[in-house]
Image (cartoon, rainbow, N blue to C red; front, side):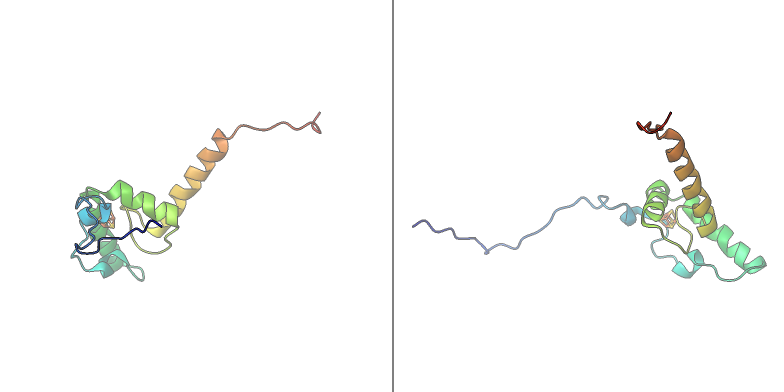
Length: 111
Ligand code: SF4
């Protein structure tokens, strides 16, 4: 009978380039995350949103971040430079475009 032995003498490592995950390149790393989750309304909140959006605007991975937020349905916070209400608008627009691109199927029941 043939036996197989696994060599566990060397540690198993998973090699990934440091930029394999877009989050490693995020401009918000090290920034107080409360900035991206503004609460309330008014001048200080608007200023907070403006500051967070400025960071996102110069972030090299803002498209990936926005895509992630849209795909996963993140409800709160600023991601990819968009607030939650802006993302709702983007999501609605993408859904509208998808519907417009979907061919209308004809069934035998239709005249
Ligand atoms: S787009 Fe904004 S929230 Fe997203 S990773 Fe970049 S800085 Fe962070």
